[in-house]
Image (cartoon, rainbow, N blue to C red):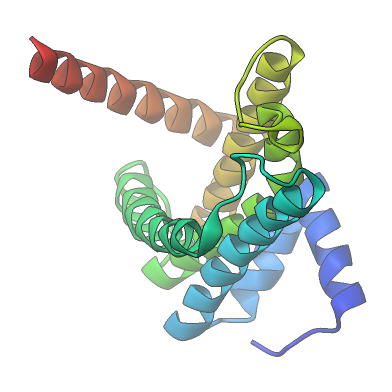
Length: 195
């Protein structure tokens, strides 16, 4: 996978958010190796960290600043999220007839991490990060739902393209069902721990 100029990268990000499947196909066709996929994940985390660092500059003293420890934790969580998501997307997709190779699905999930990094300003706005301590209230709730929906749709689009599924909507439905099931299991486990 060759380096691309900054302007072309911004155009690729914009196209990737507006119409993700053709861009994911292009990224997969570049056949990045494992190190390059990890670099994509790191780039996505760095983009998110940069946005939150800018929030700290805009609103000094705000609790939104991550600090070095927070940035390292963000990077670690990004790699963990990548590993789990790529594994689940590959294995579950295969069970439903997906044709994507493990490397193709991993590439699609790594590209999703970059798209998520590009969406970090929406996350800051939804959480009210530029106004102080991040919290969700009022219009921020709707904005956060929009951000989450866009994020899940982008993930479903990336996975659908990697597995060569025709319908992004079906992958989106399966992704939401999986998230709901995992949320239910976690709430039951955490509820049981409190009892």
